[in-house]
Length: 471
Image 1 (cartoon, rainbow, N blue to C red):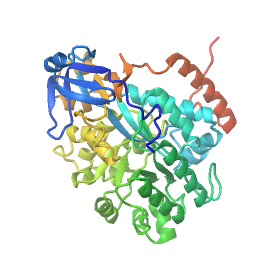
Image 2 (image 1 turned 90 degrees about the vertical axis):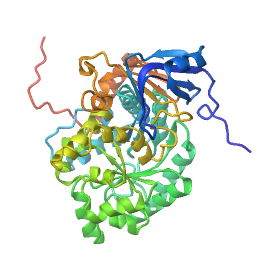
Image 3 (image 1 turned 120 degrees about the horizontal axis):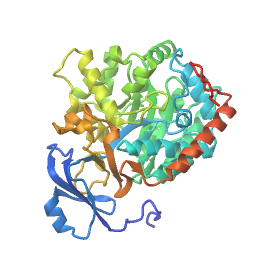
Image 4 (image 1 turned 180 degrees about the horizontal axis):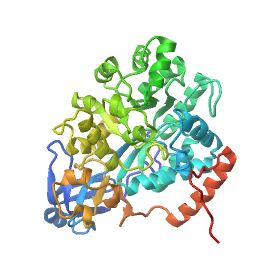
């Protein structure tokens, strides 16, 4: 018997869309930029990429998105995004806290008080923000209690991505359970969401030193068996290396390697505090890293002195960019992350000839897609790939006069220049606004949900400066 046909897997109607007239940054193997180019879409895939004149003649009945004068790029990849927990308390966690306090005194209680409604609403909020900044694919970071509700929120907004469920087996904490039970939860989500759809199932662990060896090894086995990805947090600070050395006598990635966890299926979130041997393991095993530079600066975690992400890229490793959480990276804008990643790489080596805008934009698109194992489907504008397309408006002062396209994308602008976004052939952002949800209703719902969540979690927004309510 064939696979069940669902709304997500059913063949799309073969209506045709034409994004025409812009400078198309294809990110194909030659990195061609088609000046005055066009992208034709049939259903959810790219039917053709070429000149506007040629494709207009070939598809005369197409609905046209006029991109004249604009820059057209592939949808960007955010490889580490907490879709729940933080979105409803964004900019609430103080930024002057000791290490760990923002997580265990704020984020964990907020997650513990989340309802299914909160998870879905948070996922919608975060997805809308990502989409309006040109991000079309997100990897959920692994801290979701109600994954099916969060996945529903992603679909409601219209974003592509991966979803898993909260995975740890510590002695005490929200959603903790024995390793066998955690693995069964992971298996259920992976099997239910499947692979290849708009939202697919991944194995997700909290990571750090918050998982037993049984859970770590079992999760890797599950990911390999199901042919899907595994992601977990590791070594954003010196804490994980210190604790692994004390417990196992090995650094974190050396211990994961001994357990058979490393490999191309694994996306390590952060990997800031790696030593030489761990960098070699990352490269030798094709383990990928999600690099969230704004989070490390926001939290003071030492990336300028310890991060080796640019080196890993230059040596052929797999690295994608991420935005992390709404209190640890804050803005879901991969162009901002790309500029910072390039700036840090150049400044830490005092080398202005190293790691420029083009390398950073590759991480935001095709190389980011490769790091999460999806470059066969996304990351470039090529015939047969998924129709994930971003149109950047160049009428703002930041784009005038026009310069070198990629330099201007990375150094000269950010997600605020995004005008239109298409995901899987479906327009989801038009004229800078997400069109898949009622934004006014979403804002009102989020404000009320925040008040309720903070009360249930026993949290209060600390105002550092006096706030005086005026009559």
